[in-house]
Image 1 (tube, rainbow, N blue to C red):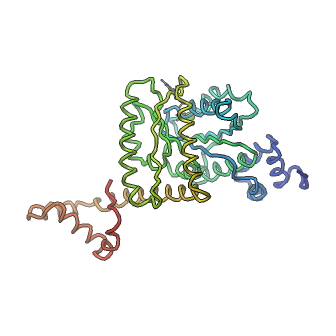
Image 2: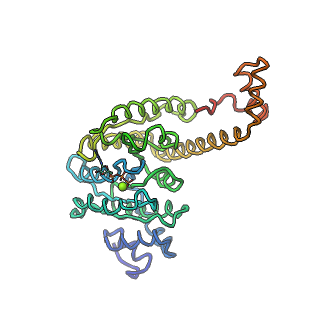
Length: 347
Ligand SMILES: Nc1nc2c(ncn2[C@@H]2O[C@H](COP(=O)(O)OP(=O)(O)OP(=O)(O)O)[C@@H](O)[C@H]2O)c(=O)[nH]1
Ligand SMILES: [Mg+2]
């Protein structure tokens, strides 16, 4: 490529990134992180080179083993079995007190990889937050993509709004759980299943792992039936695989990568719009979950409605009858009629 821009200009950095210059890569990611005013210009220059990477989001409750898994996944991706891919790792360091010390731990575990020039590891601070982190994370992925990373692994903790936004920009989202602490049921309530393309039950060496995997399989199956009715026009809904693994012991890491590859192949089989459609559907599912929650909270926030229901039941109305009457009142009979061909929003 011909370098036609000054080395330290936005376009100059962009050219260097595309040419494989690691210092320029680090610089532009810092720009993304700091919200440097020159970053948009650099990003624009990178656009033609973006779109080759497969972005794999890794999320889940604190301590589930995400970093350990990312480490193992990267090692596996660097092996011949998975085609010796160029790997970019973005660890989005949450400012939460839970994980304050995790970054150092991450560095130590990832040390095995740092001698490998085909692996690029970067942490980003999320302290500024408020949408800023999500944006910066996605921007950083774009820079790595333009650089030529074939696989990008992005670790975030939990399911806050910013994490949702980062995961929403990933091609495949792996949700990592483990027995004990971050209980499966809690995670489901937090809507973590809505973003998962692959579920990993990590720490398979610990008691309760199989039980958790069974519970999650069941929950995923139930959800698939529900969302099929209204989300899948094509009928080829992805059923989220649940993979039991131990990142700590390096067990079943290949199974996790195979599940990611299967998800990728499924999207590819849907043609050019497959990925875009999948992302759109995920966002719709997220909105739907929030609507469910907000409605539930608002509708039942006062004692009034509960009392009304009790009265009606006492007067001999059926539960179904009362429920319908309540919904009619809330939505207006017309609104309900209009949506009656869609499944109800029950959980
Ligand atoms: N028994 C067991 N422990 C594991 C396994 N995988 C990871 N761990 C341990 O679990 C702890 C947390 O692992 P991390 O990889 O830091 O977890 P994380 O989800 O990245 O944690 P945060 O980033 O702090 O949310 C560490 O002490 C790991 O050694 C496993 O398969 N089995
Ligand atoms: Mg971690």
